[in-house]
Image 1 (cartoon, rainbow, N blue to C red):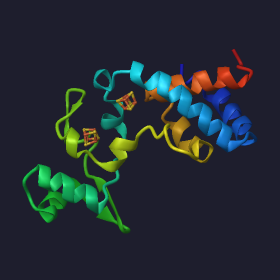
Image 2: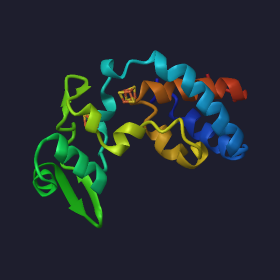
Image 3: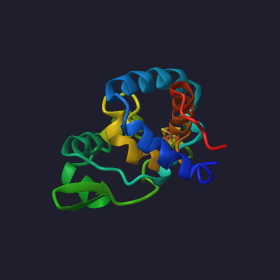
Length: 156
Ligand code: SF4
Ligand code: SF4
């Protein structure tokens, strides 16, 4: 379905850009509050399986503590560093077991925030959000409800 709707989503992205970003944020957050609790991430795990996860210094310290190792050892084992950025050195993530995170309490900031639908600035993140439309059922359903509630004319 995501593939079939690629062209439609491009039009939706362009259409949405012309709308009041604050009003869009309020609507997206309302829809997200309805949709997200109905989707069980432990039945999915797609983001842990497919995303390249950014790691901050705070994330590295917290995860190292969780793993009872020092931060340098954590970085050597699990992180790739470059251009003042750090990313996990493995996709799917090392800490995914089945569909669940083995280090949930200490998971990285990006993991806590994805899919970022509860934050202001939705219109500024449209490219990234629609990029994950086919991967994340929360994004898929929020976008579809948003089209409906905003009166966007669907192609099919
Ligand atoms: S740390 Fe946990 S939540 Fe984050 S990507 Fe890995 S398995 Fe998923
Ligand atoms: S891809 Fe979306 S629905 Fe699936 S686990 Fe990640 S946040 Fe949850």
